[in-house]
Amino acid sequence: MQFKLITAIIVLLLLVASLSVSGCAFSTTSPTASPTPVPDYSATLAKISKSGGWTAINSISKVNDTLYAGAYKSGNKNQTYELTIELANSEAAAKERYGQLVLLKKSDGFTTYSNTTALSTGDSTIYGTANAVWNGYKLFSTSVSSSIFTVLYTHNTEIDKWIVVTMSGETISQSM
Image (cartoon, rainbow, N blue to C red; front, side, top):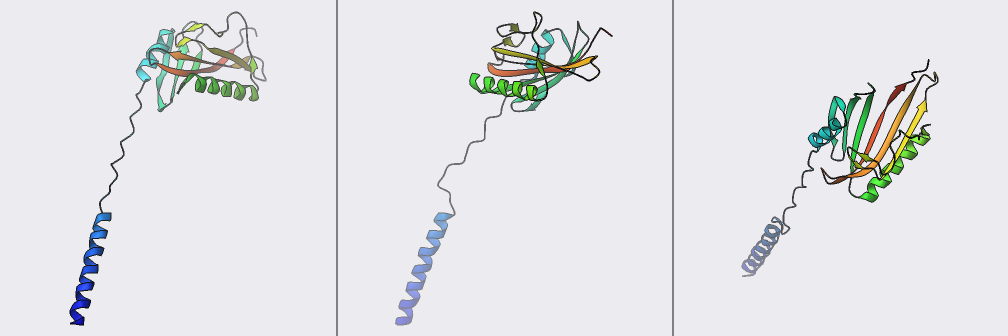
């Protein structure tokens, strides 16, 4: 009789254990949703860039979810420029990134450039009205050419995003 009682207790314990384990095999949490894909604004940004009279060498394209890059030639000056456009989540984020880029270029030896032909804060650009603009240059040792760099941030209405635009290239002095 004791043997049947011990067997019944063991069977009961095995039944309880198997029910406990089977309950753990099923998740009570709902599956996580896939992240929403970030739109590709390459075509729109390329169209905007061409509207400035620039010819695409390498049309602007998406590098990652927040960065676009391309190379363009200016029609009237026959100069080439590397162009980057960074998407920002807010005006504050765009302003912060703008400030970081200005500090970076100044630490790389660039000097602030300003004259009546330079792009200025409040100017209307092909990307939107510039909230802030910094133009810089760096002379090479030959003093015949220089590197130029422009950064601005603005809200672009065509993609409804805050963006930070940089343009860099080389100029060759006409006076030799």
